[in-house]
Image 1: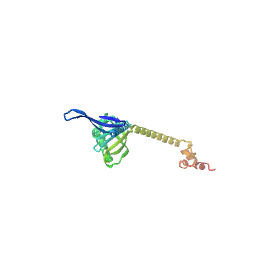
Image 2: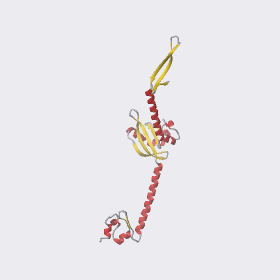
Image 3: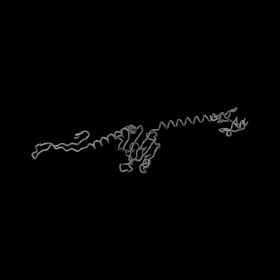
Image 4: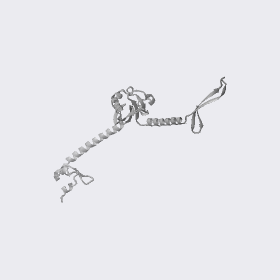
Length: 231
């Protein structure tokens, strides 16, 4: 049993009956060992573990740790949901059993990180038909020996889709701009444009024919107006 005999000090106490040679109870034997520091250390460890689990499982991205034999040592709630299970059930399972296609595809890269001791950061990999931004960091045991790796993976599928959409829109705008420029070049009238610095930014073919100065001579040339109006 654990008892507190003075404020802030705890003892592990064992009490046994004290008997004479005839077996008659004469009193009680008390064995007490102070365990205050041990209890404080245990409480600190429980708090640190609670903090660690709260942070890992609340993270809005996947975290898992595996050894060099591809066995999962840890997986957070995010990745566990994708496998439709719990983090506790994933511990000890083989990545090959869970996702054989992906495990085979990326095992060589994982082993390179483990045996070289050098992380691979900001790489893109595919899991569950989803694109992930992945950071792989070597994991060492208490002796400092390379034991496995820790993986942090963020789903960037939507981000990549947005990037692709923006690229497509940019290509459309570039094509429209090119068509507009071609149309302006073919107009039978002089068309030119001036930028914010007062320099010529557009000089169509009719301008070239009338003035005798090419677009190359005039565009972004700070002395273009002197060429047109020398006096």
